[in-house]
Amino acid sequence: MSDDESGEDSNCVAEVFEADATLDLSAGEAGDPNNWPALPPTAVIASTYLRLSDDADSTQSFDSVLGPIIAELMAPAPGLMGLSTSASEACGSLRTLSAWESEEAMMNFVVGEAHLAAIGQVSVISRGGSVTGSWSASELESVSWEAVVAQFADHTGPAY
Image (cartoon, rainbow, N blue to C red; front, side, top):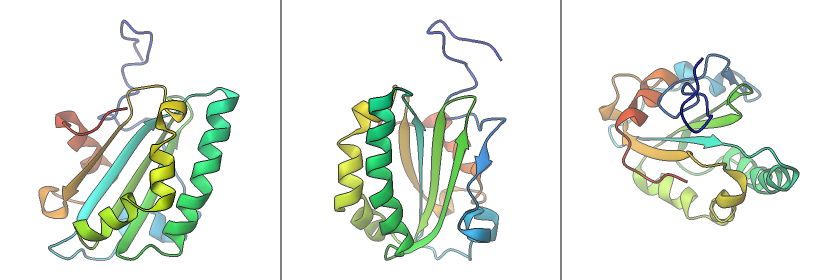
């Protein structure tokens, strides 16, 4: 692995799926996008690449916003069809990948209390270089980590 001028590993970026990425399969087989049901034509895929800060305040802030988000998603959130998370210890990053029945369902979650609280803590939680994006499922050849991560190469959405 090589470092760029900032001292960050050039393989620790949104458009490169981390070599040590591990899926959280605590939700069972549903935690793997390969096991998700067929998606309707209105489906939206959303993904976040979060470069976590590693100081105590950041970790405490992350933990405080993560619990309510997970609880809401596992309720389950209306319109949520699939949820997968991946973490990389080497890059200090976390990824989310979710499938929603529609953009409306996704946005209802995004503007919900738990997610808005997390957005309010991004400057504390992220060390910079974090991104999020969403795509119509029809824009992807397949719904997989590799396909979604590749979408970040042309990313124009929010970065934090």
